[in-house]
Length: 615
Image (spheres, rainbow, N blue to C red):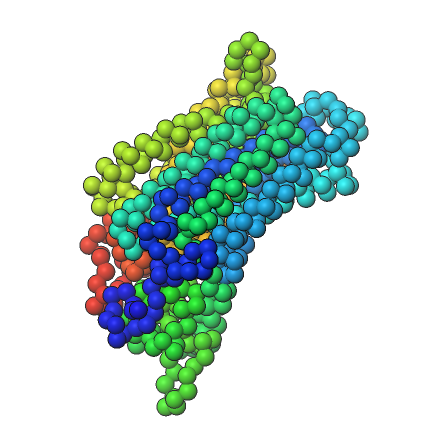
């Protein structure tokens, strides 16, 4: 066994791809394990799990308002906090998977946790004694009618929050592992499978869209006409089907064994760099310990977590971390401990994590916009004319199905038509780079809020001055535009994080994608509270302080988000141009390092030190 690209005499590190095992712990065989036939079962879990949680999350505000009797602003915050927690807990799922459990067993364990949450929610929705007494819709209540419509308290509130946060725990720990386990079925060192890997990310998003579409049409219709208890029961059944799909493909999976704590080697870099903070980095980076894969196996500190980490070359960013690689020459033969001396490759792993943080941060505003489409835009539709035919009304939550109907056709078109055409021009397996894809989506998202603001202004004026209710389809454009932007941003971000991670950290870095959703939804709750506080006066409440949208100024809030989104796009342009791929990760993909620039001439040369194009 040898290092990739080295002679037999120069190394004894097993290629990470050879470490994949089947469900019995035996080495995988390329002909029997992995590939798209194995990934299909993971995609099945993706679709059914998305159907289950979207069926709850997208109409949860209606349940919280009408059954739990919380106010509009409090209900919006409950929903956004719930969804934010789902995505924040993805970090826990990624950590447990990479460090201890492996992606397959993490999905099995937390899949059943999520299923138990759906069942508990279904039971509460079915039994009246577990909910507050029924009353008129809280949206129609006046100032002194709260006593007639009390919100859930005590054990009733406890059951509700226990149910939704069991769902949050299960779904959060499941999500990053669905993506990474499916992607692990493809060998990244195989050119044919590398192309299939890019296609897999598009297939995963197609499964996501399909599950979301069914939830927003079938499940929301069931909740509206058959009751929330039946709707939540269908979500539980969908989750059970997803777990069945996952277990059905057990014998075909390539499983990456966990490698122990992923944080210990990272902590070692910080401790070693701090300990040697007064040292001066050598001008010749060849002198750094472990540079260019020259580290002896006895000092190969990062092998337990990332066997492939030795392929990482030195880069010029965050030079202060390079001090962790300075070897103290005092004439003695003693070997410095792993907490005082690290390899270049180990330091470069930490540099990668540092470098992706600004890209991650630039997608938070994008997900704040998504939060509005799942809360205020649903209530916006509730105050409009939902009738489209005699005896048939559109459930407001089903409006979110509009972009997914479009995406069901656009995603295959993107994969079949756009990617091959772009591949001929750019030479990339994915057509355009992940950073370019993310930037395109961030730019388009701004127009979603512009559309939302214009339509809300029109709706409010029609209701106040003409006593008319606009058709609910007037707000369809904001969903369509955002759906298009999400196709670019969401898939691009997942592909970016996965391809920038090394073996042993795919689930954790993929979880950072979902963390962006979390921070976006938490920022939404913070913005609502902050806007209400800043815009309130002694005589009037804030823009979003009433339960009546005709008295609120939701249009101004949308304009604020449009401005923030546009500013965020320009911020992203700066950071995407600043970011540089490590040339050792996916060399073909590393030829472009930014949204606006191609660096095809910077293909790396292993015979000399590599300097990053951006400092």
